[in-house]
Image (cartoon, rainbow, N blue to C red; front, side, top):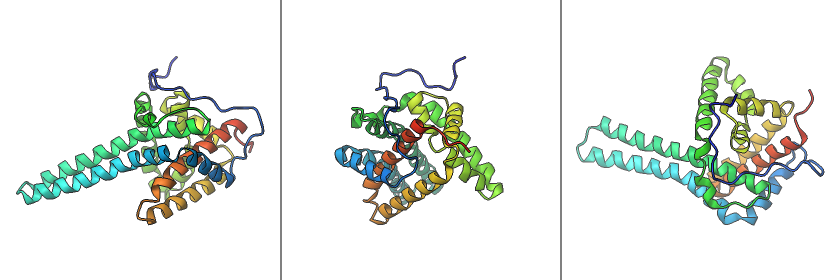
Length: 241
């Protein structure tokens, strides 16, 4: 029986599968970030373009939201109405950023696999919107439930579900299947992935401190490195614990 939450077929590029021959790369190694840097430099313009599109949309919509609220308030409009309109604009920006993020993930994974793709891929995430939205809802519910337990379960779940979106866009999985597949893939590797996530978090923090301009480099670098780890785990499989 087919999964009712699986996305429909599309005309966008099909991603190559990870090559299973050759010497597999270790699950966690700082050299992964160095390899991702090499990939980024090979197509630096497009990678920065992806960061500008995905990150810039949310910032632009937030600025528009603030401007609309200020203009409406100065023009004598009801402050509450102005605030609601501004929040709707800001929320629209966040939704657009999430949509573009789907295409960005595919763009990064295609680079990791040496597959030809283009910047336009960032706009082609529509076939996977439904399972991504459903998965985000499930993750959000888990986050709310974990509040009662001091967020510790969400940290573990977050590590185990780190690659669920990759399974959606790579294997056309529904949300539940993708979350399950990611959990199985990361078995025995959660400590390594915690270190990996910490390094990427610190790297993006540095990018943010550089007036935000550094994020144009660190965000695509993080995306490429994450997809490289995903592919490495697909090759070597989960650890036996």
